[in-house]
Length: 148
Image (cartoon, rainbow, N blue to C red; front, side, top):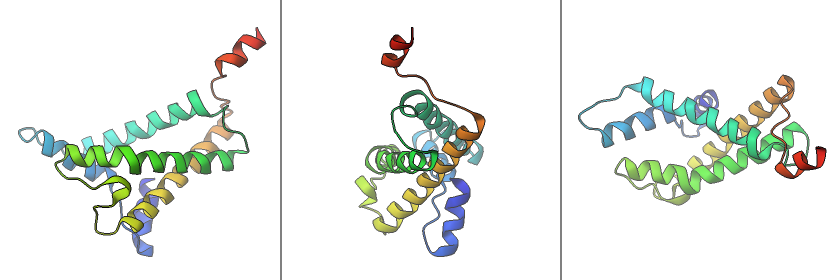
């Protein structure tokens, strides 16, 4: 996602540097204890691992289709959750309101498109890696009972 974000700057889309955004949010909340970019990126990467675990645990066996369809669907889901909930909450914690779907920013459409491209890229790469790693996801509880 990070590399996709930086490449987007070359085609005129906003560069969404989430590590920097999180670092600035931390520093707004904790004025006396300044954070550097390492902590913003750490939070960003931990979030990426968590959303990968959410996929494997809850969604991998519940969304049908080949890996690329699942990756596309998951990327769209992540982008919607980010635009509706995560980004507004993080911005509010930092003392600014960017609005739902980034409506209070300088160009909501471009930021929404940039986020969608980043998240779809994440979903596709995640599902491709899981496919080649042989990860099958966690079996839904109903299926576990039937197989016993």
